[in-house]
Structures are given as structure tokens and as C-alpha cells.
Length: 102
Image (tube, rainbow, N blue to C red; front, side, top):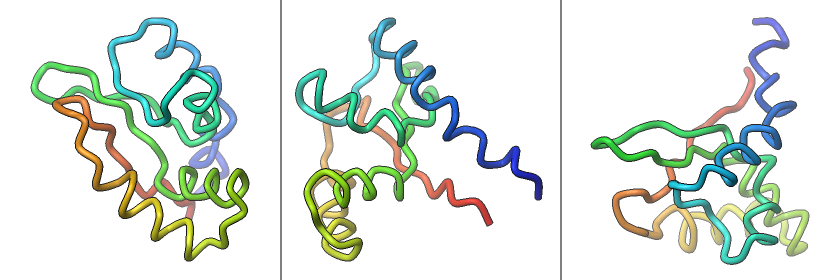
């Protein structure tokens, strides 16, 4: 594989800004400032049953918890699994994918 498979990280902020401006999708985080903290993990959007749904890099979200909250990776992964990944926010509940580069 080439390094191109990881380039989505370089453009995450641009994609996040576009979707935040256009609205219409549910993003993780409470207020605008908290949503912006997760911008580096934002991959884009997909459509499910005709509505746009935010897609995030699972490990990227966990890394935000590590960096922001001072958790170790295991603690952040457990926090993510219980408080973020399992949270249902309606038809537009965000999707979390493994976007690791192998």
C-alpha cells in the first residue's frame, strides 16, 4: 500500500468544516468547540436510509480522549466504547470505523 491510504488525515479538517457549515449531520461532541476537537477523526459522511450520517475514525476519537483528558489508551478505549460508540442519537447516530493504515 502507498501512503495515499492515510491521506484522509491530512484533509479531515477541510471535510469537517464543510459538513459543519452545511449542517444536516449529527457530530460527536456537545458544543461547537467540543465538536471541533474531534475534527481530526472525522472522515466524512455516508447516507443511511436517505439521511447523511457522520463517519469517524474510531482510533482517532479514542486519541482525542487520550490527548484531551489525559487517559491512557485502554481507559480511553473503554470510555469510548461505553459513552460514545454505544450512544444512540437517532437515525443520524455517527458511525465509527477502523481506518488504521496497515
